[in-house]
Image (tube, rainbow, N blue to C red; front, top):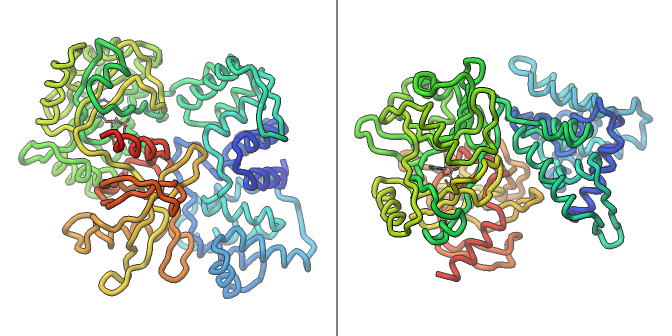
Length: 581
Ligand code: ATP
């Protein structure tokens, strides 16, 4: 398939903010995509080279791309840099200089989707001496055969910043429109669809469920093309991470009972980080909540699971809580988060900051998928296969009750022990990967916080010069657009030893700088901060329509991918909740 067919669709979807219109264009592209290109198209349409569960990144810096644009256009580094400063988007810079070039040169072979994909994939495999030059070569080879529009999207894909705005929901629906047995009539005039809603929702749910289990839209699209029965076969595979089920929030025990029904299982809400632990063919693999593999970082967990959980193969869900090896006291997430990033001296850190596993769910056991098994039975199975050992592996402390007073006492007991609050879970519910359905809810003691992504900053002045300061924060909407909610500096320290510092944050953010003008810096959404605030106000200043008053940084959320930050709905909900209290 020609790369230009994909580029045509990028252009169309970039020029509209209407989700149905985007869905329509993508579904048309999918219909005409030959089988052999389907996997690639599904990835490239969202500017990706790997499925969601595979966390490899292209990791090419803007400066290298600049060299490649220069090598293929001969426009001169100074001119390209100047244009970059003016326009801000290297993709548009490539568009501009290649347009100028193409007026004078007649070029060359048409690019195919497969060729673009293969060159981009090779970028990731290169390391060591000479790799920069070879990377420049791979990119400039593509740019030399590209027209200006193609160049724009090649550059944006390399920089992992496609800017066309396709959310998971849009791609899912496009797969439904393209391949599944339902008649969707799209009316371009008023951008609406005519469809049998009930049947449509049923099919959308089947596609969504296949995606939640596989975390891979390519697998889903290939199965969907073969039909609904193939789609239903897409399942969990131990060893491949699955999206975790998320909780809704409640403000009271009553609210919790109302959501999950009575009697309900109450559990301590431990303050650590989520671990999804797989065993398959004798091998243990551990994933974080953002589905990054961290097996190497937690050798003692591998050993503990081998010794304390019976079974040939399984996927279990738990919270790993750090504690101080000297005092035995639980530590807040901030401390243990060091273990997620640690690449060296792992044993040493494991001895200093051990974790206790609090097991609370199981999704797969000895060849059987348990997603549709009621929660109370999944818990019973856990009780059979886990042999508990204090401070290493325990089942989440539970209580089954319908009584509000008993529940409140349990909540107080949990908070007294240093936990965040309690979870309330419906006994009969299934496990829904990836969803914030109301099968489990959380009741927390602490004031609300939001997890927001840094999308901009300012270079500091005076004693803060050399550091990024005043961080612009954003939440996300359902199409994957980041919407600003204000700026924060408070809570970040000048001295490293006092906690999260400007120096440390600057180091984390620098590789993600997209654009600079004067002191202002635009940053690619990568780093998520947990933010406390006094109040939320409506505000025309920021694109979310809301502003946080007196925000304060609590910590970096290493376990959160940028697309998992707080949604605009959560910001609205926090705004509405504060009005009630
Ligand atoms: P938070 O920031 O409140 O932990 P979150 O967005 O990370 O929330 P939610 O799904 O909203 O995740 O809240 C549930 C989280 O609480 C789980 O992701 C898990 O990490 C943690 N947790 C602690 N104890 C339990 C438990 N007993 N059952 C389920 N989740 C638990």
